[in-house]
Each structure stands twice: as structure tokens, then as C-alpha cells.
Image (cartoon, rainbow, N blue to C red):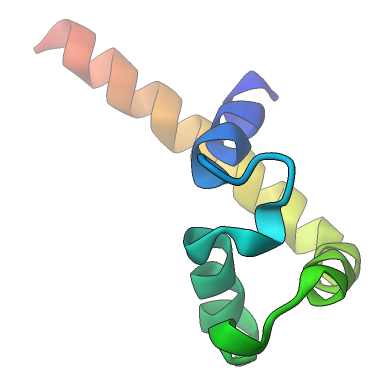
Amino acid sequence: MLEAIRFLWNATRGHRLAPWRSDYVKWRIETYSGQKAELIRAADVWRFVWVTRGEMFQFLMWTGKIGKLARERQKSA
């Protein structure tokens, strides 16, 4: 779970108190949902998070696994 929090922390860099302003977050929502990034507002971000919460949880767990594997490989190399 720490890896998921780390990903969210990095993804919202510069906009942690207002993640809907993050260009990265907007881009990810646009890529996944098809909504235009320049039109995404706070309510759209929260609605997206709520509607896709199960998929987002799986994605965050996956990023944690990938991050852990990457660090393990760096240590062994």
C-alpha cells in the first residue's frame, strides 16, 4: 500500500492539495475516459475517482508491484 501512496504523491507533485490542477492527472483521465483534459474540473476528477475506484485500486496495487520490482533489480545490478 505504501507504493500506491508513493505513486499518488509523485503523480500530484505541485498540486497535492488540488490534484485536478495536475496536468499529469488530467492527461491520465483524458487517456482513460476520453474527456478532454482542458475541460476537466475538480468535480470531474472526484466523479472519475468514485466511478473507477475498483480499477484505480488495482492500478495502484500494480504500480506498487512494478516499483518494488524495479528497486529490487536496481539493487541486484
